[in-house]
Length: 236
Image 1 (cartoon, helix red, strand yellow):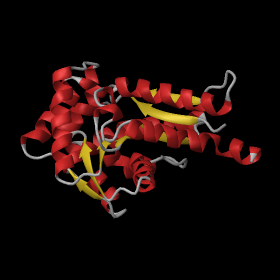
Image 2 (image 1 turned 180 degrees about the vertical axis):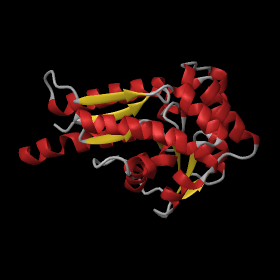
Image 3 (image 1 turned 180 degrees about the horizontal axis):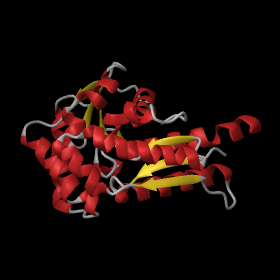
């Protein structure tokens, strides 16, 4: 089993989901008392968020790169950055380590193609929704992206930072998200990307009429496939 390196804490709420999902998936596939081999580096999100807010992305990238180096030295075979937004500095971090970092958008693209999606809605932080670092990667795979309109962007972002990253889940906020999702479906979205690792705390597939692509779960599944690839190859 390959050792999975996780860079978490952005927020710790969603990092819990990563840890839980990866271990559950490994146990489902191997049975018995099996669990995943994981090294976790958890950062102080207050520091990262401050750099996001002031546009000092390189500084936040340096923090994550230092953690990636520690994970590589600790024996990790590959790394996951447990957040969508900080993939803005993916290349900066990857350059600092020789082991691969599994990009969350690439895992999402594979899931979208499996479901033959051509046009999807994207929810996430304002950085993920408005900037190109994430959207462009998906659009280059010939999948069109819709984002919320106007004030909806600010409200989606505010719910993430004021509530979800703090572990606060409110039914009123869920209703607001579902209204935004319905609007994107009306504009032609065939599916919805939950492009922030906390949104799955609020919205699930049973709430929505089109396929939901929860990036936390998709990324976790990719990690398990990579971790167990050699075991499964030998067993086949």
